[in-house]
Image 1 (cartoon, rainbow, N blue to C red):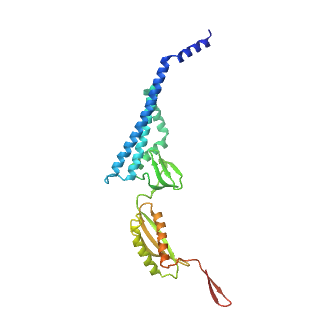
Image 2: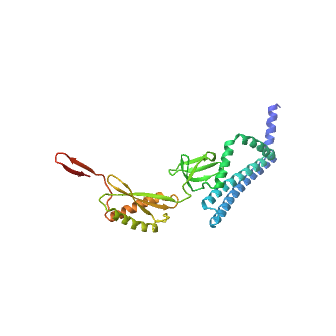
Image 3: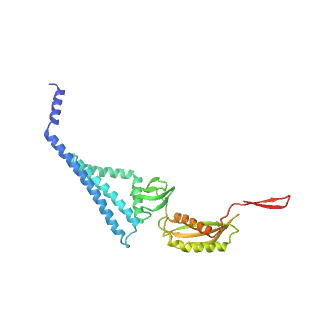
Length: 293
């Protein structure tokens, strides 16, 4: 019998060994159980975190809802990473790999990589201070550099910003130098209304003032009653009046559109015309003046 035949016989005997398949079956069952248990732990942990933070939002003495939502999302991510790490270690233990030596080696390698991964360390430290100082939270509308949009997620390493057109920008926290947060304070809506020179300015102002008294009861986004500032500009064929209104954060766009609509309808009801382009023609021959619309 040749050496190749001996190897074939040994390999066949190894495959037909019932002990091997018994150990393999038990290992597979253990791995399946570990994965299933990890899935249950992650779901239960997320449910507990969400429930705990929902209870805290009902207490007015606690942190704001936006910051609680940010911390809750971060805790869910940390829980997921921690469970995944434990699952990997347990699966390696089931496969017979010495996890103690692996963890010790990973610590040494991680220390060496840490000295070289300065950008990663900077991202994590910056992300920690973003959360600690509450610079912005999930749901805030911010401008970071050339990017502007709503915060979707804040992690220790990256921040996700969704633009109003749907693009999702993922920024390393270390690259965030300056942040403009539009969601912390109330916004102000500016609306300019133009009327023709033939219209009575005092009458137009009275009509607009009466309308502004009614609007806060119809639009809850308005923090205060809109204010008519007066004549903002005198143009070639129009007089421009300006109206301002303090609104809830990031509601000034919607309020501006509503103000334009309401004022236009009220001016039409009272016969106050909006301006339109005009041209005056002079005739030298007949010394006549003609006005063309």
